[in-house]
Length: 400
Image 1 (cartoon, rainbow, N blue to C red):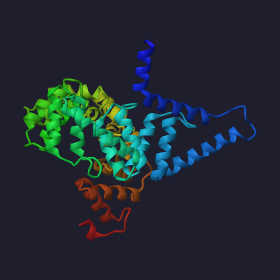
Image 2 (spheres, one colour):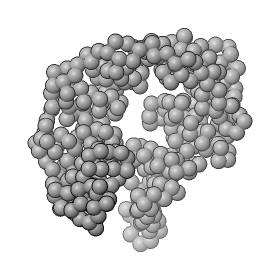
Image 3 (tube, one colour):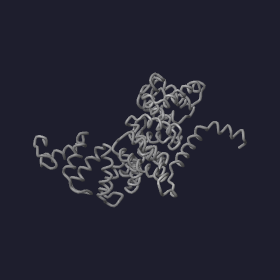
Image 4 (spheres, helix red, strand yellow):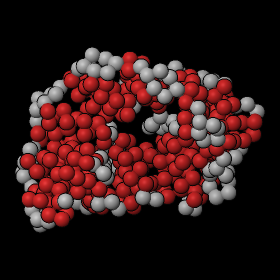
């Protein structure tokens, strides 16, 4: 690379270089100094460790500000091993509680594709939330997007896709008004040029009837175009359509094939559904071991349905040695995410003392949570507990 080419490359990527240098400087400023045994830098490091532990405790209790700071600690590797996965997790928790800075940085991560797959749709969503709260950086970023309109009109497919996304979600207060019809038109322009994300989003709009009359056949066609380019979300959705026979004749073998493609790219929904296909022998020969393997991959990504399914596998000893303790652990993870089946299953474990000490009060609590979501089995078990006075004062009226 010649000098002119290097200068051009540096200028085009200066923002990224600046971010890398800032992170490096912060790490150097905060690294421990083992040679300092009496105050100074060592005390400062100890203080930062204590602060990090405090943030961790408060974050786990649901404090949004602490969650944001904990995300910063993991992202930059302050006093802990750098862990982008943990950083994103805590940014998202804070962002979901309305923390504007967390929303902005989550948007930046998705927009730039630094540590996750680039996702403009997700980026725009979080920029909008932060901008609506008055975050200047987010507002400036959205203002920059306005220049995309010119490029989109000139036929640039990437700009057409982003401009379509801005209309799909609506940006800021009066910046770009939500307009599904305009979103559809811009997605269509980009999709016809082969832009995979636009093809997928066009499929979604046909699927849901947003900006266009609902048409499962057209949705299928656009999902297929994106899927054939390796778009994981499209591959998963195509699998769902084949499984359910929406827009195409039902075909479990094809459903399995598309789930497998998406699952191999790490799509948790596809991994869970692939596990289900193996467990039930739909589209593939029944194989509990393979079912277990795919459920486990999805469960480790925090997928509630997979966590419950993995619990069931441990509970029944299918594809793995029976282990009530492991079953309990996975049911609990899913139940805490609000999964009704898992809540009922967790109640059953407490009710019978499987994998945990028998506790009728806890059994009642989890049955109640599931019952409130309309779970018939949990409602029945709750009635039995009222009838027998287990975990709750006996009450025949409530039982009835």
